[in-house]
Structure formats: structure tokens, C-alpha cells
Length: 483
Image (cartoon, rainbow, N blue to C red; front, side, top):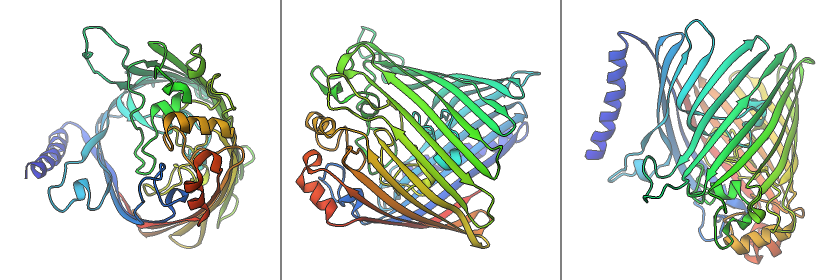
């Protein structure tokens, strides 16, 4: 009863504050609810988790809810407050029949205002964070931050109509908050600084950017990150460092380790209905720490034709550097914070699927490939389809992944089907469908098939034989309500 009372109190506070604020401010509420079921065969190509120690449930029912409230004083001042129930399974946690746990949390809380008599805008607090991507509709997110959210302070300064400056600071981690666990001060923060310079001309946009992150030695990088229920072994250490991070003594060799990225996105729409996109990113970190250091290059190019009324063809190619055969010189894959990139909602990638847990988790770092999609197919009013084929191959040497498994344990630093050697490939097809029952209520069905060819010398006979025993199939179906 105490848990139910806590939930009721939270909602009472939200709506109570909204009623009080309405006298002086305008309050706008938006949100979405999604309820869906995922059916899998051969999840992770095996039907098991990444380590091959647990069997995946063939059918899971998920639910999420998000409510965003904007308290608007005037056109130059507002506060955003967002709460959520985030991708919970029926029969577990909040949705347990007996003794449910409280699972409502705040995922947005930021102040946004313009400096008086200017267009200089400040956004301060817990907010969505991403670096530029040439086309968020086609490529989902920048692979360095992956469309994450964090506490940040951002300022946007328009210079002229064609050029502006965006700069900011974000604190990804502060493990010990205001007091360290010892009287000796320790480096337990992970901070980021970024600069974005968007340039917009008729039919062309270029957005160069740069980011520096300072990683404190004691910030706890082996803690799992991300909300995916399927790849829980992914951590900041696996994303940022080389496999040698676990060599004795484990961790960074320096109290403060610097990572940096530079890149630019490009979009050409002058030839509309032909549209072209590209992103180039280079990143490195832990320089001077020998086997701990990591550096790499990633780029993508994409094109679409929007001249047809009944469909939009899309084509994407990507390439990323991969691991060489030596651990002594560090990692040759680009470091990332939270990677979440994917072309045309490809079933192989964790990207812009409507429903949670509906992807194969392929890592864009250390791979190359292409995706061809027929998007926005529509022959009947309110009914749309998307058909996407994706092929990917690894750029990592087999010895590198084999050594990583020996050091970290199977399925921890690298995972079969997520990280590919030069001798491995995966391919997948997804067919996604949406019918708008009402303007803001949609019935969605996502279907996917995936096949992979993997090396026994890297992943072991047991996992590879199970993957050869049949292909992966997924069907997700449910409802999405936006208000």
C-alpha cells in the first residue's frame, strides 16, 4: 500500500503543481504510451543470452509510459518536467500482480530560457543529448552519444541566419556525488565538453563539431549502460577502452584520462527529390597509456529519393575501423559513450524501432556494410510499411576478439553477433507495418529475420553450432498512443 501511495502522491504533485502554475503560466502536457509483445525464435542467433548461460523467453509483453509537462511563462522561458515508466515487462517489477515495485522515475528536468532581447538560448538540467547526425530520420543518432540523455548546460548563439554556435558541458557520471568515500580526493567524475557549428545554406547543410571528455579513474566504468534488456554486459569500459583495460592492474593508468572526437555531418538537398547525407567522425582516448588507448574512424553515406508518392527508396553504406591482431597497441575501434546508430530502422541495429528489445544489437564500430530500404510504402490510407535489407561484415581481426574473450570472459567485452571478425557476416530483413486507428493511436507490427555466419575459434563450438541450427525470427506487435 505504501508503494501505491507513493505513486498516487507523485501524480497528485504533478497535476497539483500544474493547476497552481496555470494561474501564472501556460502548462502543456504531451506524452506517449506503448504496449506490445515480442515473440522470438533464436534470439541472439542462439536463443540464449550473450554468454550462452540463459535461455531467452519466446514471448514477453512490455509496457512504457512517458509524460512531459512544459511550464511556459512566456515564449522565452519554460521548464520541462518528464516522468516515465520505462520498458517494464508484464509480470515483473511494477507490473507484478502481488507487491509491485515503484518504477516511476524522472527522465527530463531542465530549464530553458532566452537572454532578454536576444535569441541566445540556454538549456540547463537533465535533457536529451546528442551530437549532430546528417539525417536523424534515416540514421537515428550520432554513434558517439547515441541519443542519450544527461545533466548538461547548453547555450545556443545565433550569429547570422546561416550560422550559429552551440556549446555546452555535461556530467555523465559523478560516482561519489559531493563527498568522496575517503578523506583523499579521488577522480570519480566523467565530464564532457562540446562545440557545434551548424552552417546552413540553400540546399546544403554542414555541421562540424568537436567533443572532449575527461574520464576520472574512479568513476566506475564497468557498470552496465543502456536500457536494452538483451545486451546488459555493455558498459562504458567496453565502449571507451581497449580490451587491455582488464589487464592487471585493471583500469586507467592515469587519474584523469582524456577522450576526444571531431567530426562533421553533411546534408545535400539541392537536388530534391534526390537527397544525400554523410557523416565523418574520428575519435581517440587514453593516449600515452599504451595498451589502454583506443582510436578509430567511422563514416556513413546515405541517399534517398522522395519523389514517389507511394514509397521512398533509401540506401546507406557505413564503414568503421576495427581491431588489429595486437592488444599491445590498444584498440583500433572508435570509442563511444552510448552507441545507438542504425540505417532505416534496420532490425540488426539498436536504433529507432518503435518497440523495446526488437533488434539484434549489431555494433557499428568494427564493421562495414550497407542497407537498402523501401520506406513509407503506402497503398491504403492510414496504412504504411517499411521493408529493409541489411548486410554487415566485420573489420576486426579474429585474434583480437579471441584475446578479448580470454581476458574478459565470453560475451562481456565482445559478443557473438554484436562484434564481427573480418571472416564473419550477418544479414537481416525487417518488414514493419503501422496502421493509424486514430490520428494519435497506431497499431504496429514489426517482423524481422536474421542470419549470421560465425567463427568457432572465436566464440566456441557450442555457440556457433547453435547459431547454425536455424535463423533468428522476431515478431513484435502492439499499440502506440501519442497525446
